[in-house]
Length: 573
Image 1: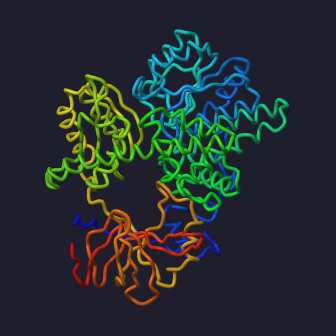
Image 2: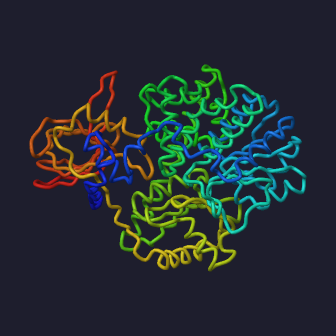
């Protein structure tokens, strides 16, 4: 039986913090205030509340550059994840609707070219004689690739959201809310968010030049923006929540692009009721799988087609690839867990590095995430990249900025890391295979230097107990509709004591229960995924989310249990 994680309660907001929420239900107001909202204004998700398009530095230069190349061939160079796929589809759809006649895309296969605008991928693009290269969700670290494009007299517009290094590429324009000294109020934009701002500015300029209706075109594809934003797990600040909520509203109204509609259906989600988690756990993994195992162009084509029939076929292919991904991941996960379990908790380093020469390069990011969930500390999973190098994917915990950690290693050990990039919570890197042991030592030293008080407890933060009277379908629906929930704006998690009425194992390893609040109230269904194996009697403490479970068209409230702790009676393993 796994050791229990501590359960801590999110601090209660002061009464003064609730004053700005007006007549909003007090329990909802408390949730919003405890997540840093300052009043009902931040619950206004109308497009008028977006940070002004004009406030993103270099936006006019970027838009005018694209418009100036309208008669030329434009090639969009994307990335091989959902953010990159949605960014690519968004730009192609908008530019084509704007009337640009020759727009193509090119995404480097991760196994042949690696990430970003490399010199090699520039040479591939150059064979198509482009008048402009536009990077989406990449490019801010592509020093050599942009230099190669400049040698070939091909201008490059970089649109990216990743954190820049000390040196920037010599691009014609760089559009990135994370550039040094940027005053843009939402630095958390995903790559597709940056692309949306660019398309919105182009549409407005074209409208001002007499192209009627151009300004309205980008908003038609906010479903793509929502999908990429959720799937990239960027913090859902007010600006990103607007983008996500507007996209979800389009989906629920039946206005999603055919590919998203088909993928929602393929993943068993109801489009008219879809929420952010449906995108993050249903649609996103199916597109990501194509980039992990094969070619992300399958996912991009699914998002580009206007044929519902074609979209369904692409969705089926993506679902099949995702099944293959799950099988590969299961084997790799078992190997990784065996390694860390053999080490034992007391010997886990502050940054866990796992590697096996048989591992699939496209799946190591998922393995890093799974091991992080088990060890509650930063994890870097490596796979072979050719004969001499390892490609690593890092996932972090709150309080440890993983890209800064890699930069610190690179600073004290120049040349140890061949290249790296990323965010606070996720990053990628390449090292020489013989350097792995030296890297493990160096990253542990920098962890100790930068984060000596890092919290490795894996504590579950909850919003406290939920009154038994709130354990009903109406309140569950209200929580669902109060989103969009996501990174830095977490879905409510509750904790409380319950009597176990009945339990059984469902599926391969899921625990289905019927529980009743210990202090009285009606019994309610509960599901604990991947937690079968113990028999609980008496009173247990649950950390859980209150969810709406729909089965055969009937909705019921259900507890989705994160952790079970036996209290007044014993559990049997």
